[in-house]
Image (cartoon, rainbow, N blue to C red; front, side, top):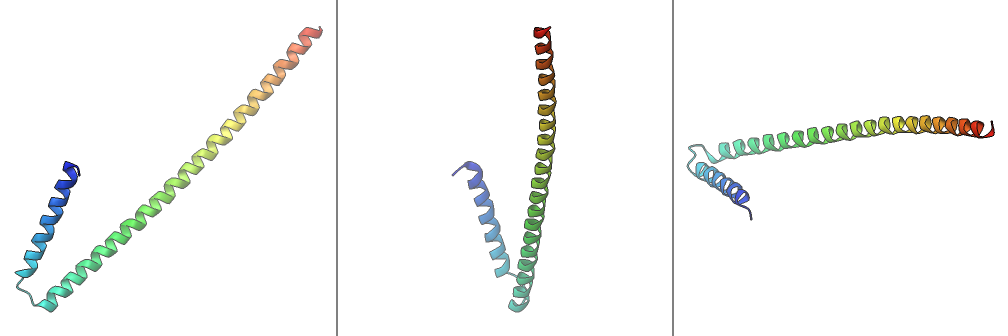
Length: 101
């Protein structure tokens, strides 16, 4: 385990312990506290789902952009190859004419 991962685990454990201690000493009734915790968990889950969906959309957009760029590059390459082929064919014809003249 790296030093950074140990630090992150320690911070997460401290946060969890702090939250647990805070809940134990909370001056609210159990029902109210559970409702607030439920709302917080639902909000967190909703935010997480939104972030995952945004990430998925960004990934899809990136894939589409890369595919479009690849298609454009392929088209340009095919055009250049055809152009070079035509020029080579012209040079071959000129060489044949020069030899037969």
